[in-house]
Image (cartoon, rainbow, N blue to C red; front, top):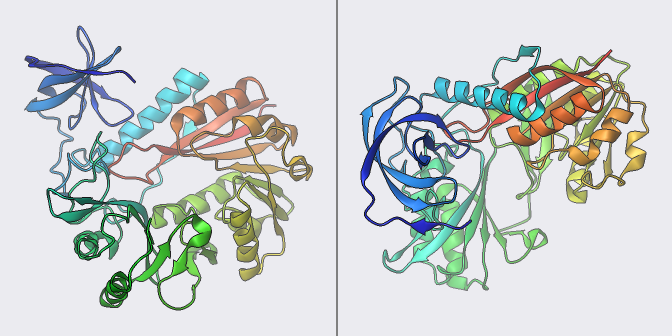
Length: 440
């Protein structure tokens, strides 16, 4: 993306028409400007800084007329840290804006409107994030290691002291981690820390690019004891992850509503927001309208997050996932929960020819939960099952709309309902769910 700096640009005044996909304000005029930290309807003063072909990047100088939805950001680092972009936006208004973005994508890309809108799936808006990848960087000018997320629109690690969206106790460990790494000999060879919070423990995986000295290992052991966390070390790929002390213990999370417990590995994907995930799984099972004779296909099943809850209701469920390690854990989770009617297969669902045997089950229900790229390649095989009902859980409204358009216009389905999932409050991420029925 080519861009050039604009020198000594004049200060302009304009009205914010909308927010873009990055949570920046869109100010239209002779040339559109994107301005962070503003809200729709506000009159602002701004200054252009970088030129692009279709728009300019700008900075906020002053909010002349604030929106009624503007609130005081809770985090002292808001505006610098790139972890959040919408803390200045009232949570209810954030949710309404995300619902509108979903509706706009469905209308513009899929050219469909749902017959009804689902109520949003909501949860806590602070200290909700149970998984995070924290960057670490020794900055000579500061004389210390910075730990946290990257600065907004910059490659640098933001100088954080704490984080208001990380789950406790991780929210308060930013400064202690910075102090720890600053005092280590390997301070400039630890680029990231994978963090996870479970009901039983807080896990930290230190990625290190060089062997750690006994001095550094002792510092890590002391930190582990002092803060009641469990530390793992990672010297290479995920297969190199080992506990700092003792044997690896299983990590667990639960879905209390479904009476299920899951085990996972330190870097496995699990949904970020535990409370929202619990509601999401129960809602998906409900919306699939499963009866005791239904056969369900769960695509992109991961650890079995949806699969096992579906198996509680259905005659049988087949989960399909491209990562063999996740499939092994999903099988183990089915065994742990005593579910013999859930089975799993490994298949690359982005390959239109892979995993053909998984689609031969005579399914009556299908659940899709793909990554951001969506599920385009697998849609013809989904339609070929003849399943009269599909629930599609999405982490990107654009690819959801594209896939819904294919299902509705090419593969014989109609969009019954759709709604947003507030998995990432204060960020521009839009998670959503769509329910499709075979057209009669």
